[in-house]
Length: 228
Length: 188
Image 1 (cartoon, each protein chain N blue to C red):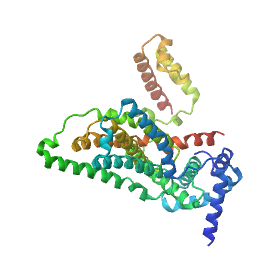
Image 2: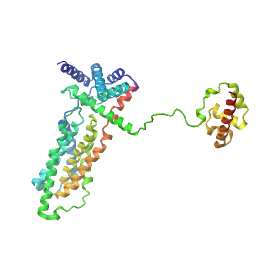
Image 3: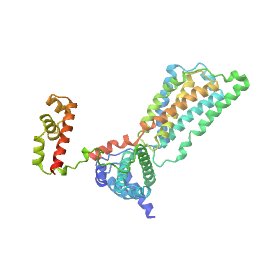
Image 4: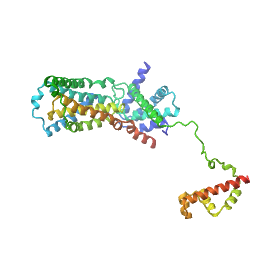
């Protein structure tokens, strides 16, 4: 810094404009869903929903897994929005834990049942590379909307924030995928779909340092304060 | 009790600042700056005074950048403390990253080990003797000294002007310097 603090204060005050305080995380999640859900629905209808969707929806395991995936996405989004508020309650970080545990638990239980009913054949693993691009496609707009919204906050813990944001978008992407992709074998879902969700969340966590950082946020203010 | 009313006053000022009130914003920033200085000094007692001021300014800039994240329904100080802690941790990470790439040298050499750069120019206090010594050099050596040392041309420029190679020029200037040193030291 080359100016004294008094001058910096005057220069910051000279540029102060009215700002709209960020809404609470739940409200921001609702706003995000307003963008994300119509897009997911659009993709599902463009790709065309699976033929057995109505009968599948009445199967409790499918319903639980879909609800858990959706709930994981929603709670991860809320947690992500909470992490960009200085002084947020750290309990928010554990919000996605319960739906995620239910989701993984149901799939794990499905694997055990498949083993009991079909033996080793019930746990056969085949390549299903379709899942990755499909989840990326369905989660793309939710991810972009999430990134834009997160950048309005404070980059307090960039990796955690973007990991949660990535989990939210990918969770929603997986929810959409299972509305048009007829792959219900628990192990296949666990490895290829949930695996993709975790890979995408990990990639988002890595990107956190580039997407959210103080340098880019205060850089403009610093330059204008030093040059005015 | 006083602290609570202070916090309430800061909360009110921040609410006004979010509404775009520049005067309230100046008051708020001036109010919190000594507190920030105190917090930074307490948590970074090993840091120099100017570095403390840098950290305080960094926190003020951060506060300014994310002032929309302040919830007017909540107290101001916990929000400010969260930003302060985060910025201090960030600065500590930056410092340790920088330190990991630095090579600590305790005795920085003030000059090179070779003989030539360690000669004191103070030894040549007689400009007339120096002029005469230069006059006595061979034409090639004199030209090299004039171009490289007096007119401060680059080796490339001097070589082009003389129509000679850089290597030959280096040899000429080296010999010229040796001759001058010999003559001038003998005279002094």
